[in-house]
Length: 210
Image 1 (cartoon, rainbow, N blue to C red):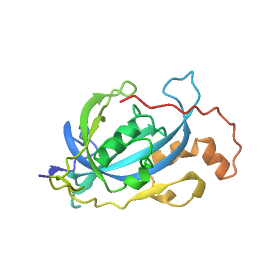
Image 2 (spheres, helix red, strand yellow):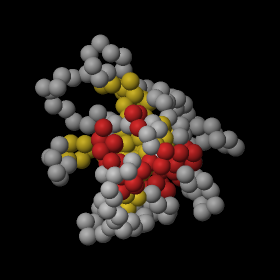
Image 3 (spheres, helix red, strand yellow):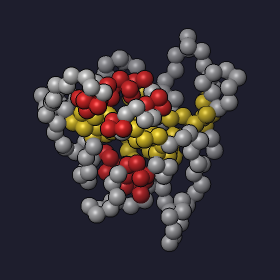
């Protein structure tokens, strides 16, 4: 059953678009962000990815008179492969079982696959505004002896997009402005487009924050 969210005017205030609770979602975008600030300010930057998900059963008309479209939302993760990292948890949920060291752990190879994301509503410490947080990730049960989902998950309606800095500007125009802003701040992007670079130390570590 789809959740339909009606369009509202800019003057109306409203909370997060995605309701709290578990929702089916499909991975539709994998964007390389380059080196980004560490969660701990005294530590060096870390290499990150942005993963974009489509929530096919949560639909919204963004302008009055336009048809409803599935809502999308992204999460930034450290490009790490440890079992406690967010990216490992996400890929294991998409895979239907925990990944081991020998299994595929490249997010782009999971495009189109589905998982369950539990949404919590929080208040931003910086802005004071409410937002939807990805609280946890879980697999969608498969039918015995197959990789078929036990219940129907609508196919993605949006195109799948991969962005790699080293092949810039391929798919650059498919990214949201705020994603482009993060990428252009990275030394990897600056090097790719011929801008002066101040090389930070890049620390590889597991992203264990939710």
